[in-house]
Image 1 (cartoon, rainbow, N blue to C red):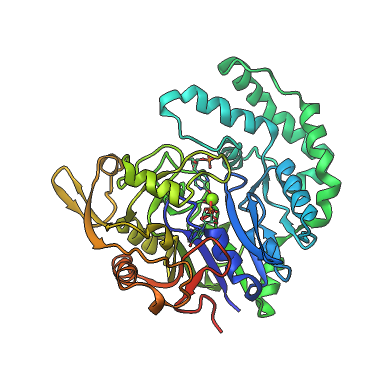
Image 2 (image 1 turned 90 degrees about the vertical axis):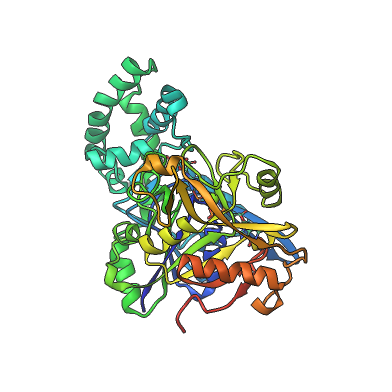
Length: 433
Ligand code: GDP
Ligand code: IMO
Ligand code: MG
């Protein structure tokens, strides 16, 4: 069976967690392939007549489906304290986490990298990225600079000490001399990391091999991105991005599954746009409409609690996501949030200094002062949260989705009409029969 990739089309928080969870028992393996606990996925499940809310950061969303094997791929950066906190939190609520598999090649967020993330941001002042402060950037920087610490290093104390010593020999210079912070002791890092080793050991495997075998056996493997297309370090709004490849290409490098195995790419597109942290955002709203989207859509970060910046949907971004990821299917989420508006604008292109751009401008500077060109569609007032077929949507809501589909250039296979697991309209199956 083929592998399926699921990515965010915008700046994150599109509802990837819900979409993964939705495929639930049809998927045998869910693999997180990039990022770390900078991600935040809120999943709402109906259990014994009650709505249960789960917030996941590091664990793949498939962990909530009992039949699914969750995998943390080599492309992920792991904060071990967060990993075990999350596992314990889920176990306390009756979720079985015993099937979790962790790549021996995934990198570990060392305590000094959490510190460095925060002090670097403070140092940058007005030029800051607005990171989640979880140590993501410094850990990926170490990976590329070849002085990172991998999961497998925890099982060889001698090697681990050598690596921690090597890293601290210059990190401490930076911490003390540039940022005026206290130096970190090798022993203190060793103690923290080794403290997790025995608990982690049974979960660790060559996940690429595990996944190859699964695919050979005809299992369904879903590769789930953290973050999103415009936060991708190569294809996003650099430098206002995260430090990993959150686009479909990253699914292969971050999991060890070759591109020839991937048959579908599902992108999640929110029916409007949001962004957390700094960086350009052409359709951002600073008026009561922006506040309406924030309030109605409950747009506050799952990870940091920060209010999300809100704006209208941007189909230049959507089209770009289709191109960069090779999207075969879109899931449009949160259509219900747009209910009650007179007009629903769709950004179809940008005006940059009097020149129309139908595609993303080549230069970031142009993107920073792109003015959206809108098409205004009529809104709808009916409550759509109970709709389960496309035909049950009001005509104007249908027209909105169809126009989006036309502009982004790939079919809209499902539409979210509420946060719950069942609050979804399916137009085309997301998995091959
Ligand atoms: P992720 O990071 O892409 O997984 O998304 P987040 O979980 O950070 O943010 C998406 C939020 O929207 C979550 O609180 C979801 O429960 C919620 N959500 C997802 N789909 C829908 C939908 O169709 N309608 C509404 N109203 N909420 C949704
Ligand atoms: P999910 O998976 C939204 C943003 C941060 C910041 C930038 C860099 O929930 O969609 P980092 O800590 O990664 O170095 O921060 O990226 N960011 C996200 N924004 N959703 C996310 O994840 C994000 N992960 C990182 O706000 O602007
Ligand atoms: Mg999120």
